[in-house]
Image (cartoon, rainbow, N blue to C red; front, side, top):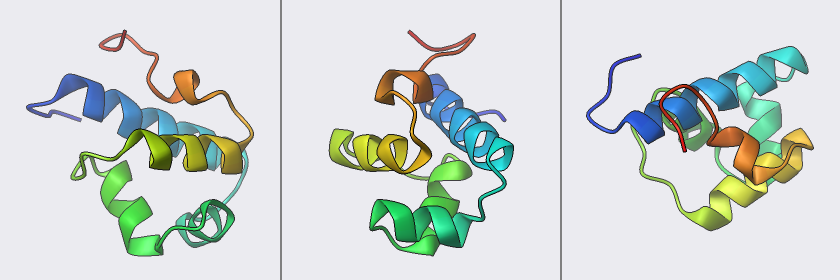
Length: 76
């Protein structure tokens, strides 16, 4: 996934990876995180510059540390 914002692309890829590993739909993840399903989809596509609060909500829903959503080859 190419992006002007490499960390955003890392977040998008990690979010999708963890979601699929747990066999959770975007809709279910959105419900668990208290977010709208179209919002979760746009985050996974790297279209959103999301807040720290929403990173935390998604990580909590996936039962992973928030930092794991930002780690990767292009991440910090």
